[in-house]
Every structure is written in structure tokens, then in C-alpha cells.
Amino acid sequence: MALLLFIIVLIMMVYALRHILFTLSRLFGQQRHPYIDIDSAQWPLITVFIAAHNEEKVIAGCIEALLNSNYPADCLRIVPVNDRSADRTRDIIDSYVLAYPGRITPYHRIGGKPGKAAALKDALIHAQGDIAIIFDADYIPGRGLLKQLTSPFFDPEVGAVMGRVVPMNAGVNLLTRMLDLERSGGYQVDQQARMNLKLVPQYGGTVGGVRLSAVDAVGGWHDNVLAEDTDITYRLLINGWKTIYTNRSECYEEVPEDWTVRIKQVKRWAKGHNQVLIRYWFPFVTSSYLTLRERVDGLLLLLVFIMPPLLLIGWLLAIILYFFNEGSLVSTLIPVFALMAYGTMGNFAAFFEITIAVLLDGNRHRLLLLPLNLFGFIISLFAISSSVGSLFIDHIFKRDMVWEKTIRYRKV
Image (cartoon, rainbow, N blue to C red):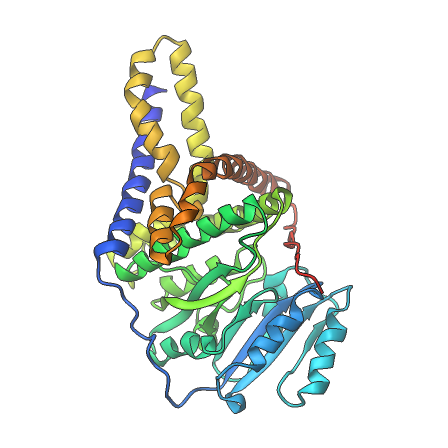
């Protein structure tokens, strides 16, 4: 047990060092924004998909923002993907189709496999052009965002692009403020550092785009996963396509405003991410298209949602060793456990990454909330560990995946 505990501590230390490296890169390294300044070009035809399921509260805002984009109207196709909505989503979409003839082509899906991945797979067949930009219905893109997300595709090696997600409802309550800190650390520091260091930026499924010919070349869009974004990120990387992160390309989302919704969201992310881990870890580490640093970073990213149950196992082993009179060993490891508790969970933005992100964003007063993030950390720890167990049970009993939609809060 002592040996297993020591191995767990070493693994956690690797993640802690990874976050330190990312933080130093964001503070002192060369910041890579290779495509951000392209404003005038022969812009390609793109199709913008809006994933929508019972989105009557938010769909109008996303459509209006896209209609006000500075992307050439004759090169832009807007396709709201209405996936079996039971509210007024269809009526709202159709009202915009009538008001803006020729600019919006709705895709009303009344059957088929449930879930965002399945809906997008069906809708992508109707894309025009080789570039698909995807938004969730609660996102509000700025006027210049489509150009910023499209410009990296002038590089023929780019298969996917991801922008920065910023919460619009951060001031609602304590949870939204904590999630705002998490998003800041995850994008402002973590994603940008991976871009700086030429590691593995991740396509996030919204506020981003994919090259459809690249997706077809790697086997098409998969609808049998909960994390279609992570799935396509790794399949593209395995086959030699680059993913680009553009930190200055901001888009605004709603984050969960109550803990029940947040826990369901995190569990869905964890289950989907670990599905990708099971499928692609070996093809990824053996891909001839990747450098050693990309393989190491990509594998660490794949393992992120395995760390919570591993951490819980470490705590349990420490307690058992203590009661077996191995207290000296446990006391020696206490400083290491303190470090790994504060700095290991990549998708929750390690505390020092959050600190630097807040300082870079110019919102120093938000640092007062930093100690409270430990509370969110503990809740996510158990939620993700539960999700890992659920995935194992799903595999044994051949249970179907269940998509848990995130509730919207905006007033109609």
C-alpha cells in the first residue's frame, strides 16, 4: 500500500509541475497568436451551426449576434439545428427565417438518436463549404468572431480551431463566480500555454470550428460519444491535423447557476472524456505525426478525469496506513498531499493558474473567492469519481449513453 501511495503522489506531482510550467509560460513565455490579425482576405464559404434543444430562452440572441457579424453575408450560411425541441424553439427559428430570407437555413430534426453529437452528425451533411463553425445556442458571438475562428483554416494543416469561452452570468451567485474563475484559468492560462508550448490545445465543441474534409478523412463525426469535441480533437491529432487555440476570440456563455446542474454537467464531461481515453490512448501515443512533447501532454490531458478517483484512493491509502501505525510515512507525505490537493485537476483550473488568469484579466478583487474554490474542487472530485464508476457499469451492462442537457436561465 505504501508503494501504491507513493506512485499516486508521484503522478499528482507530475500534474502539479505541468500547471507550474503552464503558468510560467503564460507569464513569461512568448505568446503565440499566429492568425489573430487577419482581417482582410478572400474569405471562404462557411456554415455556422447552432446546436439547439429546447432553447427558446436563448436561441434568438445567438441568431441575432450571427446576423450582425462582419463576416461577408454571401459567404455565410447560418443553420440552427433544432433537435426535437418541445418548446418554442422551432417557432423562433422560423420567425428569423421569414425575417431574413436566404440568410438562415433551419434544420429541424424530429427523430433519430438523441444527443448533441448525433444531431450535429445529421446536420453536418447539409453544410456548404469546407469550414463548419459550431456554437451552442446560449452563446453570443461578437461581430468579428467568425473571421477570427476562420482565419486559422488558411493554414492547410489546421483541422480544428477553438476560441475562448467567457461566462456572461458570472455575477449571479457564488457558483457562477467560482465557475468564472475556473473558465479564466482553463482558457486564459491552460489553453494558451499549450498553444505557446506547441502542445495539445483542445477543441471544445462550441466557439470553434472544424475542417469538414479533415473530419471526413479521420472517419467522420461520431455520435456514440458524450464528448464529441474531445473525440474529434484526438482523431485529428492522431492523423496529423493541428488544433489551434485563439485566446483573443472571446464568446459569451451561460454557466450553471445551481449545483445540481453543475454536477450533471461535470459528470457528462468526465464520462465522455474517459470514453475517448479508452478508445484512443494507444493510437495517440503511437502516432507517427506527433512529437514527444505532444504525446506526453496529450496523454496527461486524456488522463485528467482519472485523477479524481486516483486522488480519493490516495487519501484512503493514507488513512489505512495511519491506522496501521505507518504515521511517519504519512506525515512525511503531508506537504506533497497539500500541493496535489491544490494543484492537480486540470479541468478545474489549478489555483495558481486561476490567480494568474485573474491578474491578466485585470480583476484582482475576484481573488478573494479563491479559497472557496476548494469547496467546488471537493464536489467535482466526488462527482467525477462517481462518473468513472458509472462508465464502468455502463460497459459491463451495455447500457446506452444518456445526454443530460444543461438548463438555461436567461429570461425570454
